[in-house]
Image (tube, rainbow, N blue to C red; front, side, top):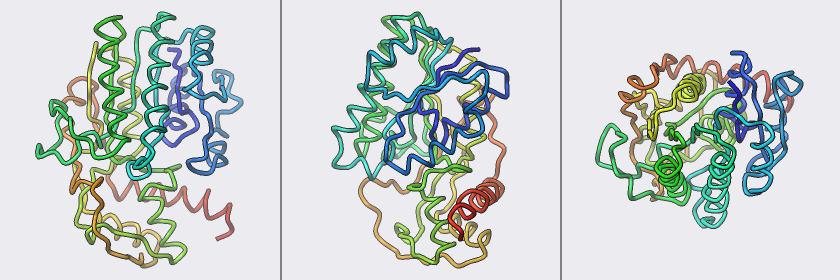
Length: 321
C-alpha cells in the first residue's frame, strides 16, 4: 500500500509513518513544521525514518493547493491519511481565521488533489471535541454534533461534512476518525499529559479545571494507530468512527498516576473550567469494533508508564534535568 501522510512529523503522524513502514508500506510524508510548538521536536520525531528507503518526505504546507496537487500527482498514493491540522481547543479561541484556513481550506486542497488524481480513499483525523457538551453519554457517532465549543472542533466538523460531499459527488471513500484524548511518547507539550509530567519534574504548578472533577477518555497512541491503519485498509464509503478507549478517567486520578510515576507531588492550582471544556468525553467504540476490528488494549497506567520512559530518555536527557 502507498500512503500519503500529512502531518507526518507530528505526534500521531510520526507514529503512523513508523507503523506503516514496519508493515512494508510505501509512505510519502509531508509537514510544514509550524511553530505551534518547537519545530525541533517535530524534526526529532522523524529521526528514525528520515533515511528509510520506502519513505519520501516533503516540507510542505497543505494550504498550498498547487503543491498538494503536484505531490499527489507525482506519487499517486492508494490512500491519503490526513492528520495535518492546527490543533488545540483553547488555542483556537480568537484564531478562527487561522483554523479555517488550515483545517478547512487545507482539507479541501487535499480532497481536490485526490479527486483530480484518482485517489479513491481518504482517512481524516477528526476529534472528540466535535461533540461539545452533548447529553448523549457515551458519545455516539449518530449525535448531530451541531454545537461545537471552539473554532478547532468547528473546523473539524466542517471537514467531516466536506468529506461527505466528495463521497456523494465523486465516489471518494472518506472515513473520519474522531480521536479521544490521545497521549503517549512524543505527545505535544501543550497537551495535559506532557504538561503535568513536566510540571512534576520541575516542581511547577499546573492549572486543574474544577479540581480534577472532569473525565477524559485517555487513549494510548499505539491503540489509535491500530485504528488508523485498519481504516486505511478498509474503504467504507462515507463513515464517521470514534477511536477512544471507552473508559473515561477522572482528571484528578490521571494527575496522581503521573505523580506516582515521577515520584514527586504535582502542585495544583484549581481553576474553573472555561466554556470550551465539557465535563466528560467518553467514546462509544462499538462502531470501531464492528467496522475496523478495533480493540484498545493499553491501560492508562501502562500507557503513562511508556510515556514517562520516553520523557526521561528524550526530554530529561536533552535538557540535562
